[in-house]
Length: 200
Image (spheres, rainbow, N blue to C red):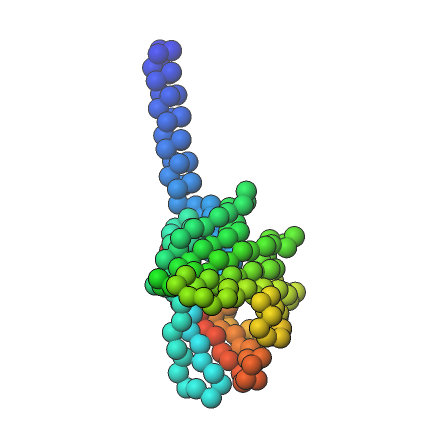
């Protein structure tokens, strides 16, 4: 084989290798948006459902959708106005418009283990003189890395702090929790939360 043919063959192999690497990269998870929802793996959709202890059936709640790279796409029927991320591709802020009157800004902070440990929410009414509501949630994790307690602080001074403890009842094959229960701090009734998770 001549030098020219060897060079052409070498270049063809390099190009093919680069194309293959780019293809794999485009299908890999590069965003870490699922961290704020306690999700892992190639999640396509996560649907939340709730029921109180005295209820027989679950009520559907929000539906979170991601693309195949782990990037947040939609949150139910809300409009995501803005998302900010840090150098590690983790969400640090989301601005969501629920309707023409209400916008919520959520800011996220992470602990040394990469888990969300503080979320600060600010709700603003656009066409009203009502005061903005600001609350802060502080997360505590158990030894397995799941949320064990949430302390909800009202920074607007409208109410006292609320604490919720969580017990996990079931998980799927990917290690994501699919059902948990807590004691509603307002009513002291047990509340169950279920997640239906679809994967790519």
